[in-house]
Image 1 (cartoon, rainbow, N blue to C red):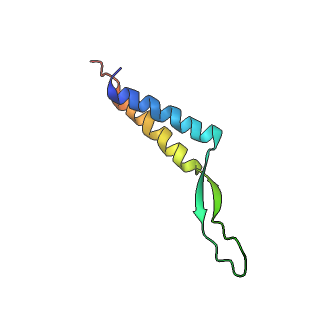
Image 2 (image 1 turned 45 degrees about the vertical axis):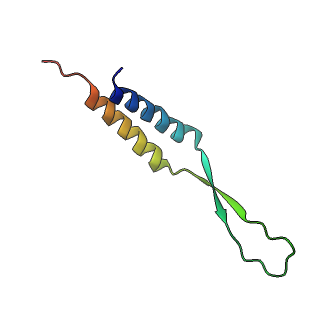
Image 3 (image 1 turned 180 degrees about the horizontal axis):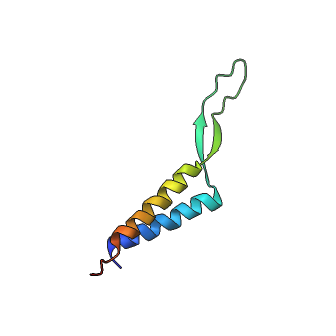
Length: 72
């Protein structure tokens, strides 16, 4: 398996996983709280946008298309 074929396959699998599993990432969010004894930074969970999964899937498909051997 050539390198670009492996990368294309990985990108396709990653894109499908993003679209199907809808993973989340966490972002720290600092809040200004007045008159409280304990101040804790909040963590906000955000989903990875669907367009990222579609872009990765498209890039993987393009990589596989470009890696195929030409006949002729």
